[in-house]
Amino acid sequence: MHSRTPGPAASARGPDRRTVLKIAGGSVLALPIAACAGNSADPNTVRISYQQFGSGTIMRDYLTGVIQTYTSDHPEVTVELVPLVAAEEDYFTKSELMMSSARTTPDLVYEDTFILQSDVAAGYLRPVGDYIEGWDLWQHFYQPAKDAVTAENGDLYAVPTHTDTRALWYNRRLLEEAGFPHPWEPGSWQELLEALRAVQSTHPDVVPINVYSGKPQGEKASMQGFEMLLYGTPDRLYDQEEKAWIVGSQGFIDSLEMIRTLFTEELAPALNRALDPNLSELVANTWMPEEQIAVVLDGSWISAPWASGGASPWPEWEEVLDVAPMPTQEGQDPGVVTLAGGWSWAIPDLSPRPDLAWSFLTEMLTTENMAALAATDNQVTIREDVAQHPDYQGYSPTIDFFTDLVEDAEYRPAYAAYPQISAQIQAAMETVMTGQGTPEQAAQSYDAAVREIVGAENTIEAQR
Image 1 (cartoon, rainbow, N blue to C red):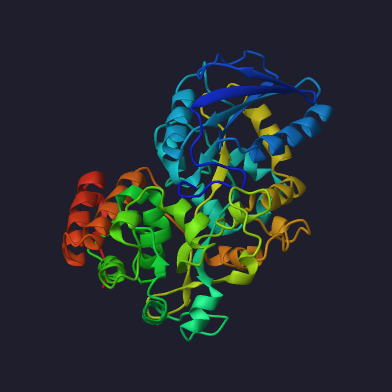
Image 2: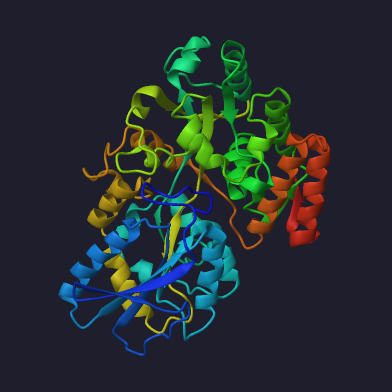
C-alpha cells in the first residue's frame, strides 16, 4: 500500500542500491549487482523482487525461511532474491523498468495494490486466474481483497497478501479530561468535532487531531485523510456498475468542508507542520508518545515502531492509547468506515518461468507462513484461515480491532488513472486547508481535472 509507513525495523528512506541474495539449498550468498542484472536462462532459477525498507530485514528473513523449506523439497531449484531498497515512488519505477525487459524481469514481483492496475494496463503483468482456480487456499480470502487484484475486465492479476485498515487512535487521558470517558467512540462527524473542540478548550497546547492533507503528504492525504471522509458519505470516487469516475458529488464537497473546518478552527496541526513531508514520523514518534496530540486518523500499522526493538520504542503506549472506528458522516449505516490497502504478489508478463514462480508462491503463502509473517510485520490479514491461526490471534493489543474492520472495508478504485486522480484530491485538500478556495471551488477544479484525465465520457454525475 502506497501510503503505508514502514514496519518496525524499517526506515522510510534508504540508500538507493540493489543487492541480490542468491540462495540455493538453504545456503546464502550475497552478491552486489547492477540494477538490471541479466536474467538467468536456467529454467530452474526463479527471481523474486520486493521492496526493502531501508535496513529492515523482515521480508528477507521471511523469504529465506520459505526458500530453505522449498529447496529442501526441490533441490534442483535456485531462488534469487532481488531486494529493491528505495522509497515508494522509486520502487514502482524500478520495478517497472525491470519488468519491461525479458533480460531483467523477475519471475515474482511484490506489488502494492495501489499501483497494480496501472501495471496491468501497461502490460507488465500476466493473469493468474488459471493458477488460482486449482488452489485450495483461495477460498479463505475475503472478497474485498480478491476485488483489489481484479482488473476491470474481471481477470485476476495477483494474489493479495495482507491489508491495513484505518481508524481513530486517541489518547485516553486527554479525552477523559475533556469530558469523554473511555471507551470513546464518536457516532458522527459532528460528535467527533465536539470532542476535538473540547480537547482544544481543556488542553490548548495539544493538537486536537491530525488528518493528513495536502500535496506533500501524497497518498497518505488521499487515503488516510480524504477518502476516510468521502466513503463515510453516500458518495464514492468511482461507480463500479457504470465503470465511470464520479464528478459533482455533494460528499466530495462535504469532505472538503470537514477539512476546512479542522484547519480554520485550528483543530489540526499548523500549516507549516501539516505540509511537512515528514509529518507522519513527527506524529508517531514524538507527538503521540509525548501526549502532544489527542486524536490521529491513521492506519493499523503505526504502533509497529513502538515495539521493543522498533525505531521508536514506547512500551507504555498500550496504557495511553486506544482506538475507535471512524464514524460515517451522520452516523448512517453502517455507522463506521475504513479504507483498506495492501500488497500482493504478481507474475510479470515477460517471466520465462511462470509455472515455477507459481509453485514457489504457493509455498510462500501457506497458512503457517502468512500467520508468522503477519505477527512479525504487524500486518492485518485478508484471509479467514490466517485470522484463526493461534500465531495471529491477539499478537498485538489492536490487531483484533483492525482485523474486524476488514470484512466491510472499502478499497480505492486503484485503476490506471487513480494515481493522477489521487494527486487532484490532494490538490483540492490543499486549496481548502490553505484558504485559497472554497470547497465548492476546489471540487469544481477536481471535476474538471478528472474529466481531462479520463475523458468526459468516462465520468458520471453524482445522483443526489
